Image (cartoon, rainbow, N blue to C red):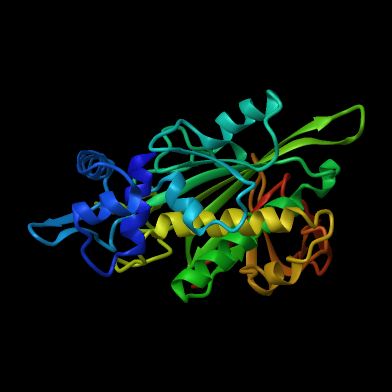
Length: 326
């Protein structure tokens, strides 16, 4: 599209002004087409400075989520992208597409979700413009008991991407939360369908929600002691596109190695729960105190109970919470 070509050219020359005549000549289009494309880009949220006798300049703080913007940073062109300003749930939509035989590598990316979902039936707060919400379709040859490795791979992919772009360390709270400075900045929801005839998974949809910055007016009151943002007010240009591309690239690469888990040490090294006092949370039951002792190769969590015995926790059965120290 003409507007994509204009945007990409302005990105490539972001350190200077580009005249309308220069844009038209470089792209082989008319001055009128340039003018229309600039208007369309501004309507989409791109901040473009226009100065008489100088031309146009795309301001570095522009952070619009778009397919072209993500592809600019994506290393795997075979991934198929669909980008939305608003969607109910990227996971819900992608599961419907998977059931209609969509190919592996299809990713849905959104600026906002109106019906975002988390684990155990919880909702996932997904406000506009301050985060990214994406789902990736995989079709690995895995059995159901091996699916936890996919969630772990996603957690490492998110942590590595955020660390690279922020320069700040990230932690992983077993099994699916990425934490920064004690606050949850990303959550992962992995959903799958089983082929009962073969005994293998038919497809896996990995949903990831990331809080990049604090929403205007802060998080809702019930989340303020839990949720946080991966970045402060000063952010890299095109941050949301960079994060989306980095996470998709890494997760796609890790998925190619399954059922091997070359990301295991990266997961374990970032564990927030090892050596910590925890509470095991099971629906309808009282919290059970324990200490996190080890992450097993299948990403189950081994904990020590007050009587000295150990128990192996499966992510599909329980959650854990780090106990606050008095």
